[in-house]
Image 1 (cartoon, rainbow, N blue to C red):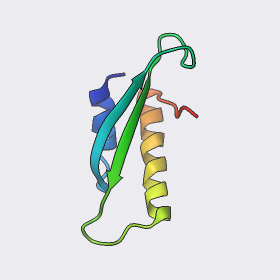
Image 2 (cartoon, one colour):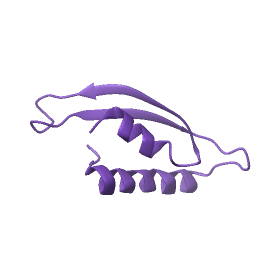
Image 3 (cartoon, rainbow, N blue to C red):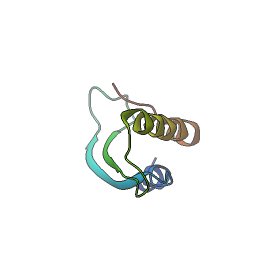
Image 4 (cartoon, rainbow, N blue to C red):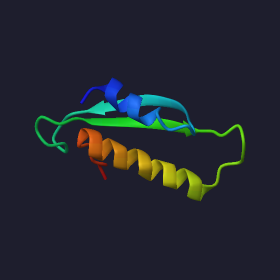
Length: 76
């Protein structure tokens, strides 16, 4: 999975204002052939104040789309 494909999916959501890739890790805690990409996402709406609930909903939608289109999983 390329960074650009992940970025394209994340930025397809209208509340996403900025996305920064801040870490790439491939090591003992990540399965062989896989890598961990860590992103900082800034959400913003010009129309209204965002709530925790609203942002959480968009975060879940992003994760769902990354999972369905790329097979990505959230590393805990």
